[in-house]
Amino acid sequence: MLLSPHANRLVSSRVAPARPVSSLLEDARHGLLQRPRTLPPKYFYDDRGSRLFEAICQTPEYYPSRTEAALLSAHADSIIEQAAPAHLLELGSGSSRKTRHLLDACDRLGRPCGYWPFDVSAGMMLDAGAALVADYAWLHVHALIGDYTGGLSGLPLRQAGRRLIVFLGGTLGNFEPADARAMLREIATLMRGDDGLLVGLDRVKDRARLEAAYDDADGMTAAFNGNVLSVLNRELGAGFPVDTYRHRAVFDENKARIEMRLVAGHDHRVQLPALDTHIDMQAGEEILTEVSYKFTPASIEALLREAGLTLTRHYEADGGDYSLLLAKRA
Figure 1 (cartoon, helix red, strand yellow):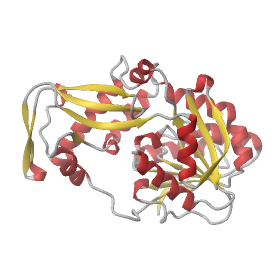
Figure 2 (cartoon, rainbow, N blue to C red; figure 1 turned 90 degrees about the horizontal axis):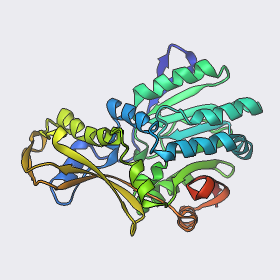
Figure 3 (spheres, rainbow, N blue to C red; figure 1 turned 180 degrees about the vertical axis):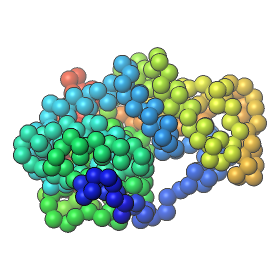
Figure 4 (cartoon, rainbow, N blue to C red; figure 1 turned 135 degrees about the vertical axis):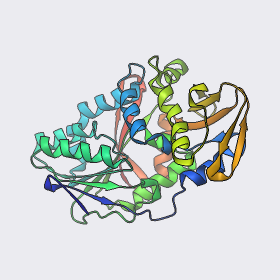
């Protein structure tokens, strides 16, 4: 356990995965050496990528972050009253910016709780934790450093008191459907009878709005997407000409998902010394870097039911733009 300058109110632990988690090398071998070429989105989030994502959330086109934050602001008191948590466990906490709405509600309602952010970005998490304990005199933060996709069974959580597991940002939509169900089942297994899950899910809507949200005019999303090639160059000694790739975002109506792609600008050979090989990219060839599934009320109900969860409250944005769901074990 690592102690912070805030003594007992901000500590951190590294969480070992409960099951094997694929490495960048393994994912590059699996995703880049065959067509169609793919990379998992988790490699977006190095320190630069995390900062770029925070910038994306401030762009006018990226409605999910604003809409979810507005729902949290409007309904945080109701959420805290319903869940009555002694502990908040947040998966993929990032900067914890939106979590402040829940902590403000705890403050207003006189319901102090502990906060357990869980993320791979230690620097961002600890900076956020330091700001939180400075702003909330009653708050204790235990930052969990690791990859939550590696499993939740080894978390050093306290046994006493209700937990509210928080999974915001529409992140569940980045999982393939079977993986999303498995993730929710694992969360349900962690939950006890009176624990709650708060999850945010983006909704199916007009194609133009969806595609604009993932291709902002300022180019923040394009830079975020291209950054994954810089990660490969830095970590694996790859030779991607990053600046020659074009960002592309398209909504697949049949699969109800946004697809983010990197498009090669010209024919070129990419050396991959860590894999002792190379790949030949053709002009216009694409690397799929992220999918983001969008949901309907029917698909939300089915997803929760198949994961062994039951919906207790549905906080819905105007026009059905976004859903904030409070659920318990069925």
